[in-house]
Length: 136
Image (cartoon, rainbow, N blue to C red; front, side, top):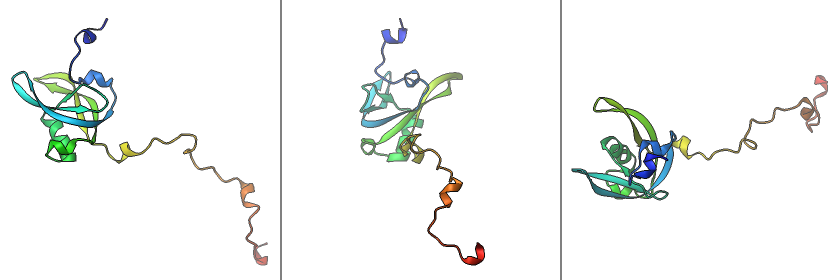
């Protein structure tokens, strides 16, 4: 039995990423009361759990998609786990970034996109270009 399953959270935690980057599409952004503070929480299309934003993550998304959270909707972000300090102690956390060109490339089929076939000597023997007599 897992304690984390006994007390499910409404918000994403670093452990939820299982050590991997996760690409998600922003569905909406809400301001929610968490403890004594109001925080921005990003919700995504593929999960019901929200991502509570801190200043670092808020500015990372704003840098990519603009200062108005309405402009973030429909855009993708990549969540990834990090180890950081909180009040002098190392903790697991989530950071985010906008996808880059490498993230946007489709994964290539390793069979059809492998290295080009090396020419074989017999490939050059049947060309239609006649040689000049002085080169024979």
